[in-house]
Image 1 (tube, one colour):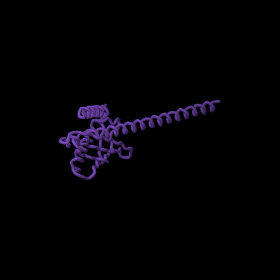
Image 2 (cartoon, one colour; image 1 turned 180 degrees about the vertical axis):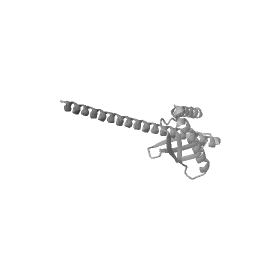
Image 3 (cartoon, one colour; image 1 turned 90 degrees about the horizontal axis):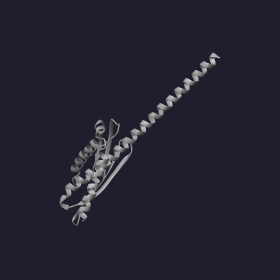
Image 4 (cartoon, one colour; image 1 turned 120 degrees about the vertical axis):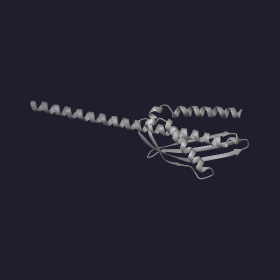
Length: 180
């Protein structure tokens, strides 16, 4: 029963992650994503895990919608990664903190269990889910920042228009006063 529940939870998480990460693939292709750093703590399998995570982050970034941004610099750091067997269950937990360079951070954490014989598959599964989650959150941050910049630019254009209108009205009054 527990095995069926974990499969259902995994399916639900993957479906939600897919929906969050790929709403507009067309605009995602226009955005150049640069991963400044991908840090994985030292330990057994660190090089393999870092290589896997880099690939998964790049793949997730290709699917994510970063909005109107042309270029985005990101970084990611694995804060926690545990992979342990207790009884007949192997549990993998991972926390990744991503950052828009020069901006805010996003954190993604997941803990997932399965058969001890499937340790490597479980580790990749967890890294995939956490990479999709953090990239989806970073994409939302970038879209929000772009929307805020657009709103600010619109406010500045409106203020400039109002100043120009006020100058034109003042000039018209001065010309009318000069005629009188």
